[in-house]
Length: 210
Length: 210
DNA sequence: CACTAAAGCGGAGGCGCCTCCGTTTATTAC
DNA sequence: GTAATAAACGGAGGCGCCTCCGCTTTAGTG
Image (cartoon, rainbow over all chains, first blue to last red; front, side, top):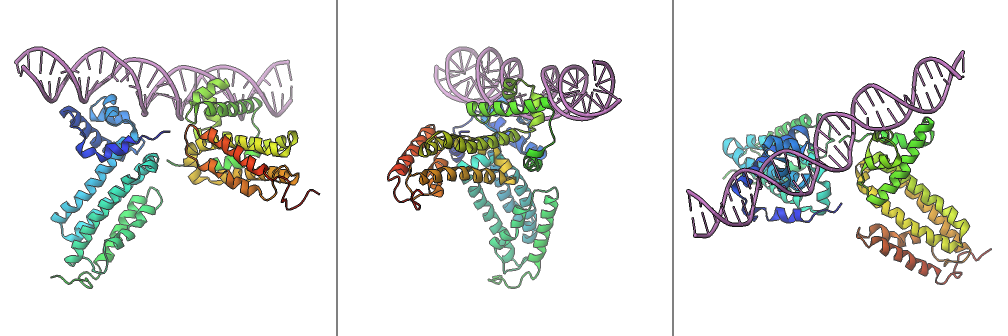
């Protein structure tokens, strides 16, 4: 019933938390990685014992690192968000900017899929600590902005839209009901949006290529 | 994850649900009664096995009657609300109308105490089926109205207030934080309110006693 | 009353949660 | 290198959840 405030502290200090012993750090990383996979595969209610087992550690180790399920879920979610943001840069290097945008948005669909699941389980935490989602969503939309601006700048998508338009267009992904077809429907939405963005590419940019 | 719509149906038809076998009905009643006591004593997370044990039935029987914890909690809550409403009539018969009102409000504090606990556990259900609270709160405020009007009518409390004023004044009980002192604080609030209501009793009633 | 079908019972068993503490391992100091 | 110590490990064990199904009881019928 009582929600521990320590969660907040823990996450804020994450970067400068006291150095873990090498083995501890290894186990912790492993756990987060495995947890991400297991949550994706089995859903958010997956057994923590399975996670420990697959990570090759005892259940006690899992609990030492993540005193509650929510702690683990939160860390997984943050990692997911970071991965998504990092992908923006990587995709931008490897692909034409419109393709980069498209692929990133497809990945965004997956991200939202997890986010939905996690939200259910984090609900209790969130009522107390609501920096989590605002934190990450800021950085995610920053990543999107970067991609959209690049694509507009080199004329691979139309110039009369900006990142917030795109985000708005994507909002259907958030709000669509949690049906089995959700993911496919969302993928189609991204394609549709992309076609719309490509249509008339090169025209109407506020700044014509310099 | 999926929330069963059957809960709604089950409750609506509660009155005319197919007759249970005598032993089944006995067990069911017993379970609800015991559950109310155990929830009050141990909190909403009390062990269902303890409830079954104390009710003298097997855990299987509990689960047959109440397939999820939430089902049980809901029934307990409805029973609580009914008891509160019924108390209005009983208190009105046994006591002067201002005393009846005061005692009822004290009981109301207990009711809210459970309601808070239950709300936590029912949250998931409530997002789907929100008739529960509106249902009961209508009847509860009806009970309050009856008491307030009687007390105004016979001049034991002041006449320039009505039931909704009193309910409004009680809202502090709802919204106060869930601290250990909550109950005492709420009891004092009721006393305070009662003093206010008695002050100037007999004056200013819209209708002087007929 | 006896008989039968249907309804209901109950607890064993499998699984997951979480804690506790004896054992192991990394790190630090020498 | 070794020793000392703090940090971390891991899994046994206790408890609760929930399902499943062989056994018991009730309600109906003649």
